[in-house]
Length: 292
View 1 (spheres, rainbow, N blue to C red):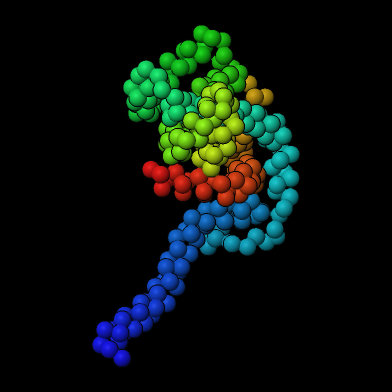
View 2: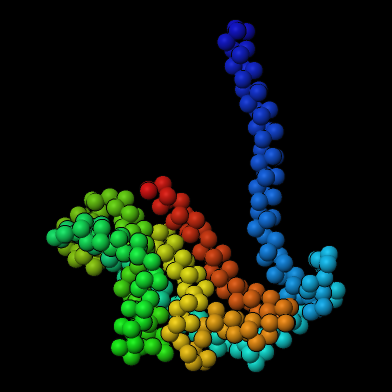
């Protein structure tokens, strides 16, 4: 065996040995980091099943004695936390806002990516510049505008703006549209398809992973939104879950076990959405990152 072949064999053997040593260490490190992130959620679940007197015991009691599943029934049936009404309001608010965002952002992004019109690039830069304006700067003028329109007190200020697009999602979808071959658009136009048909039948299905990213991000952001409903809503019957949970916390701040049970119930719809859309969501983020 030649010297070069022997050196190559030793190099490969060393690489395999290093891989066998590094891989377990890497998995151990990742498991430790994941555990750090999981502990708060684990504490939430355990606390929701404890009697009240075991919530703040020292050292912490990780296994409740007894396990009180009834905490969930007591939390959901509590007169200060009308879960059915709050869930309906949150679904209405988050659902319509997400539909508006998906429609408006995909249409505007398609226009910026595939249509030629005067000042297109300038308008796109202006659109991006709006992301640099802090939300607190526009909060008061926006409130005054909606008050003049008579929308304060209802869901219109929270839902209608979503139908006019979001700069971040428009940018995200535009980059995805630009990555698609121009031949698709040209072929559709040669076959006589208009812009709307080209957009809806050909281009929109191809950007589904990126669109799913926008949908999931917007739904989660709207579901967790606290400031918007706090500013525009005053009627308890219109409160979403975020405000309802805050009211429950304020009124029953000593009942931590019930509050944790209510908080866990509020997070379940978001977890279902994430796991249901996980595959396309991860695919969309991966592809978008590679294109960027």
